[in-house]
Amino acid sequence: MSAEPVINGYDLSTPGGKLKAYGDYLWKDHAYLRLGFQNAHWISDELVRTNQPWPHQLAAWKQRGVRTVINLRGGFDAAFHALEKDACERHGLEMVDFTITSREVPSRERVLGAQRLFESIAYPALMHCKSGADRAGIMSVFYMHFRKGKTIREALEQLHLRYLHVKQGKCGVLDYTFERYLAEGEPAGMSFLEWVQSPMYDPAGMKAQFRSQMWGRVLTEGLLKRE
Image (cartoon, rainbow, N blue to C red; front, side, top):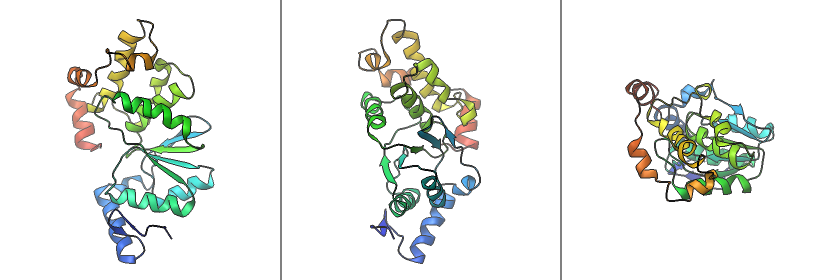
């Protein structure tokens, strides 16, 4: 059993508490959509990106050698977080919370925090958001750049439709962040980190200048209900 049977208000030590948690997980978090589809991709021999895993899927990832689970969603009062934390404790997985958003230009602190994260965790690791498309995408760009030494231009492959990322919606602000670097930082001879730490990096200003497309918003905000 979990060392903390009551997590986020869900008492996972009782049948009724588990039923409530799984009920909320199924319907409030749309978990039924992820029973047969994980959107899982090994992007290196040490890191897999995926959508929100079920507890039994975490057990399977443990059997495949995963040591660390990175939750990018936050959700510290949600059923998914309670079930994930319980499953990680039961299966001996290290759970790391690193909250990032899909509709904001990341702050300097988030960018630097991502660099430190990938330097400090135990691998192999699993990294997830809700759908495995947007937040997992930008963090995969950071991983490929900071840990694997890829250029930003090369790492941008991680924000792609093949991972279900739709840049024409509001989450396209993530792509726009890197496009701005390629347009102004790279030509000035600046590394990505130098650009992020310079006055040129203006998250609020970049978000204000970004424009999504209506059909992209309808798809991601309406039909797909992206978080």
